[in-house]
Image 1 (tube, one colour):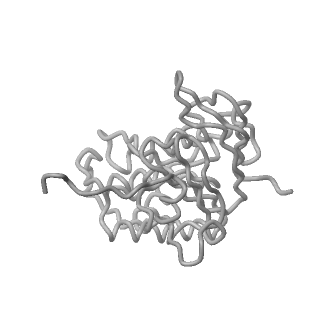
Image 2: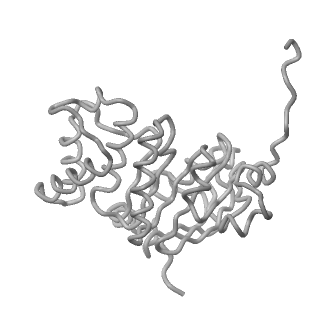
Image 3: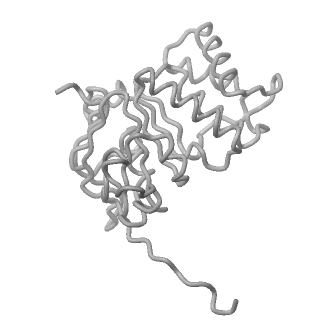
Length: 249
């Protein structure tokens, strides 16, 4: 069997009595595109923090691009890209300054950084004013800058936490096109999103998590009934119940 791009074996993360992730196992082949969905507090962001080495599991084993994450965390972090939900930008730098900083952390020379940054800015239609600080970027521009930082070092595995939240339809389309092109080049992608329509259109593989447990994993076509959409499947697996209206209206 070929080496998996990502493999979780019985991974659990507890915070006191709370199991944020509970006995999670899954395997992604190279070039997979996984949409990880769940309601608020289901464990999606904790899962991404676990697989990127930001949080240590209470139990279980994680392998990333052939490396055991617990044994070789620095090498794993060299090989992956990550776009956290809060974006984690250095906002008192300009976009080019910030990407210089990120690129140097990965050992890239300035000429390579600048060339890749220019290509990413063009693809993402990101055109800040000269010397404009990231603090003065719009929310959508900050999302694009965070995605640039995640991709600058040409990672083979990329994690994106809520990349489409709060952005306009044009920016969403540009980002979707870039992610599709990366998958076509063999990059493995994992994203979380509350926008189920985007996940359904973009991600061939789906993982549904609720209360830290994996409720469904595989190609959407294999998980859903004929004619069933992702939203209906999601509600079926997590037990969503229809509610009535307000009593005073």
